[in-house]
Length: 364
View 1 (tube, one colour):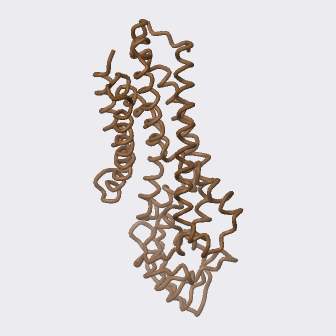
View 2 (cartoon, one colour; view 1 turned 90 degrees about the vertical axis):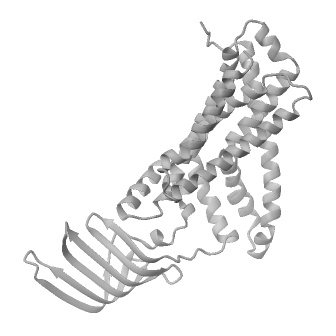
């Protein structure tokens, strides 16, 4: 029967795992920051971004975001690197020869990967989103060009039986053209409010409608018509709803993200796919640490001629292919080929199968 009480060997492997993982993080993050500065230095100079904001608003929030996004890659490279060293030093041969099974040797690896998975999940759901808010605010102000809403023929269901239409919307002037608000009771129209222009009033939080035409229908279908030069109306649609970038989903915690998904589904908003991708990525990505850990141990636990170079090369290639496949799987959502939950878990399913096959043929 396998004993799960941590032994000296377990603590040794866990210490090697976590220590190498943190070292790899520091080295790679340092390199990435240098490349990022060299890429964005012109933007910082042109927009006169304050040094304090570059350091504390952008890079202080960029580091946890980048670290968590590529955490599975760091885990895989870590496992490949230090397990290959153990194998090259014949330590794994000694472990297995001492009566410890390959399954039992995996135990401290899984414990370490599980800790990283839980920590990454908590970061994804609650810590990273508010951190992303500061990073994206900086990027939108000092790095990226101002967002322009180019959508036309905008249709939203803002409440059950309540529909809004705009021919076009400009986030520069905060105004829409050919505005229509319809209220329905089943297939029966209750009222229809039309206007040539609708302008968002930030102070009142209402839309100002110009040259409006309002039709109301009573129970017998008799309509009453009123019209005028201007009227204010309060609806469940704001300027922020129409001017937000798609990456706004990165700033929402789990509850807020679910609320946005519910609202967007009710409205029939095509942007809901970005929120669904973000939600399922937050769960799928952390669990990759366990899958890639099993794959890494199975690949590198056998001593090979020529040292650890081949194992590291294979590990880097597989880890980058996983990240690439995860990004590519998002195209299945945009094209409507797969539902979001399945599309984002396909890489884990595929690489989980590969990990199982490698585990089955690993040295026992």
